[in-house]
Image (cartoon, rainbow, N blue to C red; front, side, top):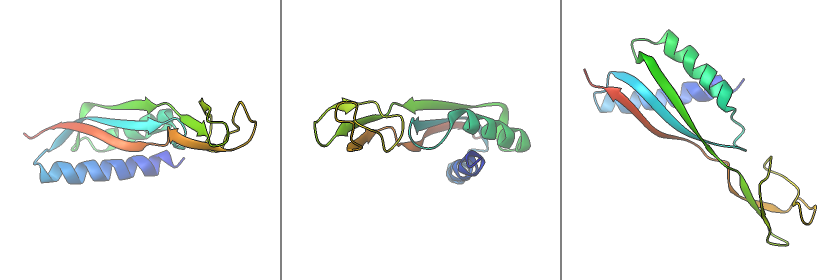
Length: 118
């Protein structure tokens, strides 16, 4: 489950930024996760809960992870149809050719975080 590693990296970035801002306890982290980003929201949530429970000096007990899902969208470079792919390489529903250019749905980023400075 690579989501444990991804969440570890996210928390490292948040912790480093929080230290620069004198934030001592994280209350909330918001992510944007694309439908075809190869990250599973449920597994990210589980990984977050494990890290949170093991690092109560960094997180409030009620700290939460909010995940905003970015819908996948692709455009066929042959016929121009815009469609909803279920994976990065998907067949155009019109042409039946894997000629789609991904327009959205691959994002994986930290949107924001909140914390306390006391």
